[in-house]
Amino acid sequence: MPDSDYFVAEAQINQFWRDGAIVLRHLVEPEWLDILAGAIDRDIACPGPCYHGYEEENGRGRFHGNLRIWENDPDFRAICLNSGLPAIARQFFGGGKVNLLYDQLFVKEPGTVNRTRWHNDQPYWPVSGRHVISFWFSPDPVTKETGALEFIRGSHEWGRWFQPEVFGDLKKTGGSGYDENPDYEPMIDVEASRRDYDIIGWDLEPGDVYVFQGLTVHGAGGNERQDIRRRGYTVRYTGADASYDARPGTSKPLQVATIQTGQPMDSERFPLIIPS
Ligand SMILES: O=C(O)CCC(=O)C(=O)O
View (cartoon, rainbow, N blue to C red):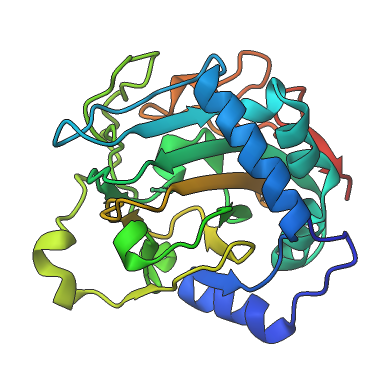
């Protein structure tokens, strides 16, 4: 994983805040990709408690999802807490504290045609504020054919909070339904009118990382390849301009009883990794 002295250029930080998403190349070293690949395979073989696999859309393939996996696996924990990722998040936040929000897996095995529907993340999360960031990477090459992520440039500035919905038919519900929030709006049909949006995206080599803000609208295609896995792993952090906000519609497995809305994230669940 990158060291905590990894330097993000000012131009990249500006691009992130302007567009809502960027890619950082060669961030994760091959030895860490091997560790990640092993940890992902362990989770697939024996999923942690927040597992939420999705039904295959054509009866083939497999879409494995899980979250808060760092809590039960030392390798995911090391990536989330002991790598340079929190220090990189801090650079995007312009300094200040960094908390881990949680980590998540989106594994599309070869031939899994399920799309990841367009959405923005923060409506799903019990967090308010602008300092909310995700790092997404894979031990596999990621292309349009295998399910590269796409982002709508500038959508983090729209001020639009879209109602969460599950990404497909769940194999197992595990509390993944979302309450309606009257302040949210129905998700727009981006696929039906792609030309109306400024859609950006990049192929990734193993070790390249998408970095995106919590309100950036994004989605991904299925994995159409028969020979390449797409093991997506994402780690999310919050900064000083973020506080707990368990508004209706947020994911129940991400809520925590020990913090009240409006309070800082600091807790066992959302550990403070870098103090102010
Ligand atoms: O990997 C995917 O298909 C979706 C990833 C995603 O939506 C996220 O990390 O927020």
